[in-house]
Image 1: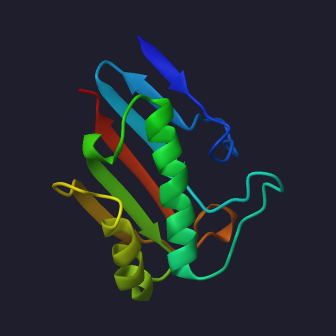
Image 2: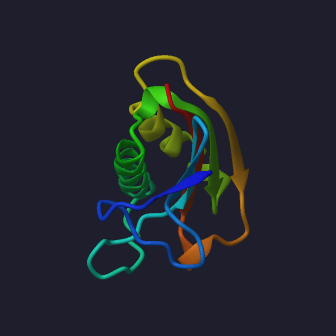
Length: 126
């Protein structure tokens, strides 16, 4: 059985998916981009600010699913430009207190709404 997770504290899905789904003791968070919650428009500022916005949204989704960043076991980061890798890492690392999760970082030719960064993850519910 699966439980659907959606919170008003993160952007609503822009397609036929949910922000997150819980199956058993695993929480799966869909790819999240830097969208303004009111206007639903993509926010394009600096890569660090966009990454912070994405990580804050992910934090809200984790919370709605009964988790926090300590529960995260795997992340996938999609970048439109791998030259932003170091800047994204700097922001990303600040959200984890303990051990870092497994991770893949991929440069994608094009992301939804032409975003600069998109992050999805999996968490284990303790």
